[in-house]
Amino acid sequence: MAFLCWAVLLLAGVAYSSELGTQTSIEKYPSLAQVESRAGLLWLQQCVSSVLTSYHVLSTARCFSGVNYSDSNRRIRAGTSYRGTDGLVREVQRVYYNPSWGLLDNDGDIAVVRLETALTLGANIQQAAILGEGIYLPYGLNIQLVGWGTTAEGGNLGNSNLYELDLYTVNTDDCLETYLGLDLENNTITENMICAGLRNTQGRDLDTRDEGAPIFYSGVTVGVVSFGVSRGDDSIPIVSTNIGTYSNWIVEAARY
Image 1 (cartoon, helix red, strand yellow):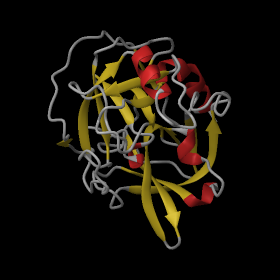
Image 2 (cartoon, helix red, strand yellow):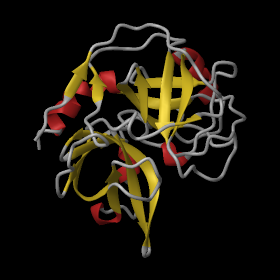
Image 3 (cartoon, one colour):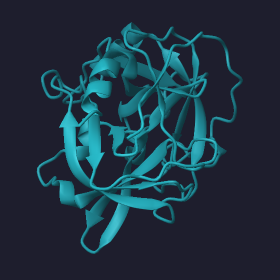
Image 4 (cartoon, helix red, strand yellow):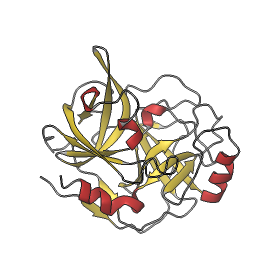
């Protein structure tokens, strides 16, 4: 089994691109993997995950929970740029949920998933470098969201190809104020989260197929997309789980 890769960052500016996103490839982001959900005889990409070891991926707890959830109706597809096609497919053996998940709204929304059989690491399947414990990002930092969700504001269809989108970290207090003003059941924002939005609007509509998608800074996974608002005119930040709060737990969970 391969070991996890840690990263300590020197925080600096990074160039940004189109607000509609830029098509990219698994060769650039080989730690990405799709989370597929069974729908009858079909398997559909539902969430995103990140490769931790040959036997483990990282995602959100919400992507592996729910009234009708079972390990047998989720699987992982790694090593491909295209949604639902090619790559390696692996079944889920067990899910490790962070102990704080479910105690305070969306806080602690993170899970380590063990696979039935090992992934073959190579050019298109590589381990994610994760943020070190206790590191918190400053506001206004340019970060990248990578996934298969729609790139159009308010769009209904996901992308067949992998896309990356530049976002910027948003002040947590401002993010909390925004969410408290919404009629949502779970609207608590904590220091264990990263809020992010487009440069001009400070928000970004959420495509649920991007839940679990990694947030990158300089190639390091610093967050995983947790929740947001689907049709908010790009005015409401997307909220991610901050890896820096849970790095030690992630490493421990990926030992099993």
